[in-house]
Image 1 (cartoon, rainbow, N blue to C red):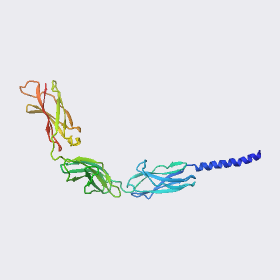
Image 2: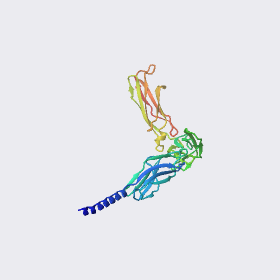
Image 3: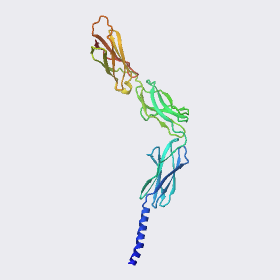
Image 4: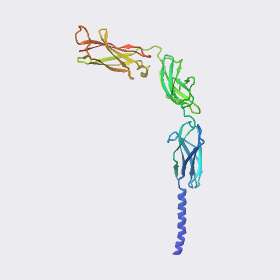
Length: 340
């Protein structure tokens, strides 16, 4: 019996050692995201440590503007040792003056370990801020393009791109905004455009080692060679109001030709005039809405003095669209209403 136990003990010990060795070999790597060094406008060296825990291990770094990262280094081998190993990589093509997130990740046959998130800020000034503005002074063959440029404390070059599509194809001569921290409004006139065409444009600005910063796309339409005449419909209700205050609502719509998008021809005002004979006794100015419709009220607190004309007082309603650069003025058919 003693001999049997003596034989069993070494076997049990050997089995335990084998199990322990397998457990060590099956451990996922230990990872520590480290510090950063040699930070420039566009590069930074990222550090960390990896312990393979006895299994062949690879590692890589991730970095980006948020904790979603987005950029990943090439994977490198960390070996199969059981001690922490210092590792590093150089992050390149970074944006100056910008906060970055980074972390270290390692993986082996037993699993993947993700290091903690760390941050650093690149040297230099951040890229300029840009905002494409509206086009002004639009004519048949020219327009003035506007924008805002935030130089972020460094002299900044800017130009406009423009063309008949978002491929643009043309750009203005570059100009410069001096260093500062306050947004600057800029404007550039462009000429030689074709009449009655929609143009796309945007601002682009850059300084130092920063990549060009484009603004959002915007559009304008050059004026037509000959302004078309729109149609206009209007109606005033009620046709008769017997009690004061006498309140009338005038609604309607202006319609230009289909080749002019609503964003351009649905501009301007409609003047609603109330006439007693040839004398104007009231008026209301109504703006066109983005759908080219208009609506508004006119209120009379008293009956107009009309000499010996019997009541109810009959009024003529004249509605006229004032026109804009794309459409000529136009009157609606007159209406007759009464009050009192």
